[in-house]
Amino acid sequence: VCLVVWLNRLFLMLLRGGRVIDPANGIDDRLDVLLQNGKIAAVGKDLDVSQISCKVANCTDRIVVPGLVDVHVHGYEHATPLGIDVDQYCLRRGVTT
Image 1 (cartoon, rainbow, N blue to C red):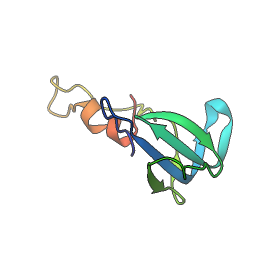
Image 2: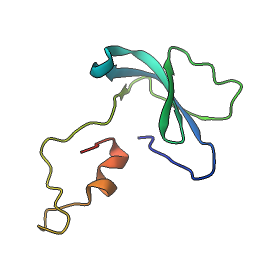
Image 3: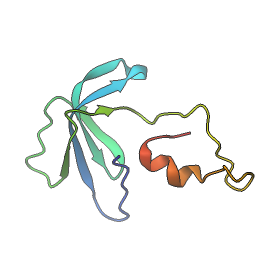
Image 4: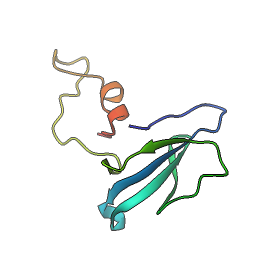
């Protein structure tokens, strides 16, 4: 999962060749996704990043989707022994409950 934000610093990461599925926008295709400071900067086929410095993650055998919603989670951090800090455990894994 590539949710990285660097304060006062430009950070670029390219997710190369993953199967991008975004039902809200009618997308289901093999595409590249360029992240800039943790936000989507560009989506397209074979994005050319030869002129910029960025990390590249090979996502050929991966599915790339917008944040997922977990419809059943015990996220009551201080209410029960089963509760968790959802920001700490879920957000870095792409779950945006």
